[in-house]
Length: 220
Image 1 (cartoon, rainbow, N blue to C red):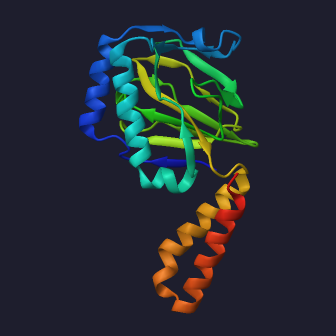
Image 2 (tube, rainbow, N blue to C red):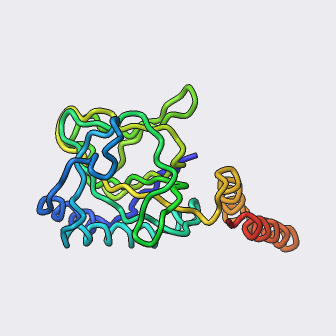
């Protein structure tokens, strides 16, 4: 299951990141994964001070967003990384690595996230396509929006044919290891939020007891 969240970044934050993207150096995307033949893009050189400023803006925005937190149950979030796609660039079908190396130890990639910076009207192609069995779902988000999906999901970025695709990518380690458990708990919380006030107090309390007990049980 995946979730599209709008307005994760404010318009001012989107403009800040766009300005940073114009001033920082980008390097070959395979620098972080030289054996990944599917990857054909550019990524921000993280050694530059401004690069970390863009990452920090995006990271803070993700962690303050209640929709994302309620869907993912985050324990750790990898530093968001700016990625750029020029005409002809793409990222072939792949599932993300199980563990992402970080300075404070490897992060288990339970969920992946794409945060859009470029306006979709300024480039052609470049859709994030998620493969769900025999079906596919293509997403091309508005600036400041984010899609979050299980890192085990097969997905790709279709070739950019015109303009420039600019996004930030990140990976999230959840407190709930099992994907199905995570989805069930999110669904229960959604039901509680939408219907809880319509229930009598006893049933509402019982539902909250079930949610809290499962959350406690499933935290890895």
